[in-house]
Image (cartoon, rainbow, N blue to C red; front, side, top):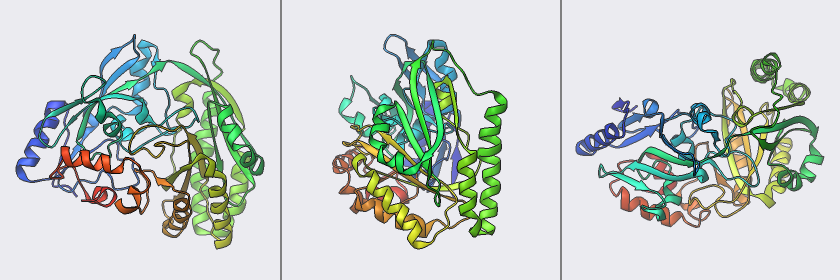
Length: 420
């Protein structure tokens, strides 16, 4: 537990908090929404809750660049951008995170031509350990942008983030169950043939639940889900019945295979068109733990097959689906997609189940393919292994040494993954 928790409302308040902590010899961490499954935001001494540091700072309609306060939640952004006819280029399937937390942990969406959220960052302001505000943009300290845009909270406290947005658009969504074998055989073509493609596989079944989204102009006709239909699919089936299924499965593991087969029949199989943010994000009401690894796109099939064989060989009963999205290569130094076209394999366990054995075995498989773990999700990697997987790892730690030599912004997690 931290010694104290502060709720800064302005950049100056963050400066005062950091300055006071340094004077007292205390370490400082910021938290956005507390969404991470890892301990990346755990504060040893002083916790800065950025909930009140939110809102729109400025908009340049001509360049479609938008500056937001760092604690602004992703689900608040669409309403802030709507008056200007703008949208974020891509989003993940959860929008409860803060902007700063999402970019700092490497949150991503789907799409072989689209990078993670940090690739949308074109500028930032952060409070450094010296108590100064460091500006990073195309005009000031541009060489720092690939590090600051995805900095794990190790370089300072983000107070403003400037995003490159795009004209508002809608998505035509097709969600349906398909034979798993066919999806795996065509995954490269499916990923490049759509703007956004991913699939979910329920263990103990031979079916995949696919999600295919195509981008359309904002003026395109919309055919959204009816409120009742959306409630049935997302709230009743996606959350309510899944919660009940997980509870039954926890009590009687033998029921998991038939429950999963039923889930594949009940979920998905719908088509609609709506505003981009309403299609990208979905509500998650069932608690779980998650581990996600990024592997080279060309390795996703063998890595997935090995994971699938592992579950069968061990005789495990896994109630949560495995998620497989793709993303474009990017230049953010600590991005899981740095320098390579990437596919993600995300495994989950119901929160009442011990995930250790399952996650560790899957982690071994992903590591054999050069996998990089999501910074905000569970994993056991340390600086020694991560240095071999990130070509710019030493450049990042050198910048950390320069900006935070006394490790004001460190905690046990950062000591493990970046070194002391």
